[in-house]
Length: 247
Ligand SMILES: NC(=O)c1ccc[n+]([C@@H]2O[C@H](COP(=O)([O-])OP(=O)(O)OC[C@H]3O[C@@H](n4cnc5c(N)ncnc54)[C@H](OP(=O)(O)O)[C@@H]3O)[C@@H](O)[C@H]2O)c1
Image (cartoon, rainbow, N blue to C red; front, side, top):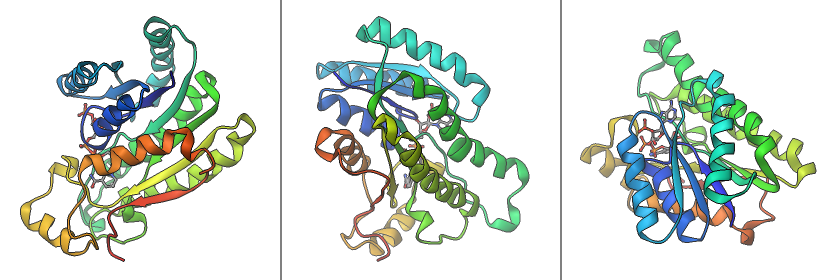
């Protein structure tokens, strides 16, 4: 059985990805930060369908905690799957901040940086020794790197950095046959940034060729699909998943 670690797998896109990966027979380690009940609900939903999942706490903004997290992953792999390797890492955890550039202070800037760029960099680095050769790093970026959306400048800039980092991961990890890709969701109906008002949803749906905003499963299915062997030759790509947003 292949095993995937999904950060922020307790809600939104990550929760959908966790369920979709489990449906395809993968073992799932999902992480949460502040809401253990939401994580437990995802684990229960997976187990109710006959899958296997474990929820672990991880604050992606706290890179000092990553060595201890790796040890917890090592113990979890041994106890739950009798293995010392996992196969895929989905760097998905994140949060939104809607604030004009002129009002962004350094704390807000640094917080976004730690979660959306520094965290994925060092988490990947520290987990690589436990990743099987032939594995996959999948980073969740954003369509805001292509479409300048007023109010999300630092968020989008760090997501852009994550896209670039993805290509460097592919370059440097290729000798272990590890591929690295990023996906760039368009607007998806989750709790991100406090959720989407009806008015905003209508506006965004009107800017999308398929006439609606995305649902978490629109992205979760892509994540699970990309991790499968069917897509083994897709590497170093950024794939937008937005129903034709702002084309
Ligand atoms: N929704 C969209 O329209 C959209 C579009 C483009 C890209 N994205 C990206 O997709 C990813 C998932 O977003 P979402 O819409 O699914 O958001 P969401 O519904 O708000 O879920 C966020 C998830 O990330 C976790 N998380 C937040 N801060 C964390 C931290 N410091 N450390 C570890 N985990 C943390 C949350 O855990 P807790 O609940 O336990 O805190 C939760 O599991 C993010 O990277 C986001 O930037 C989303």
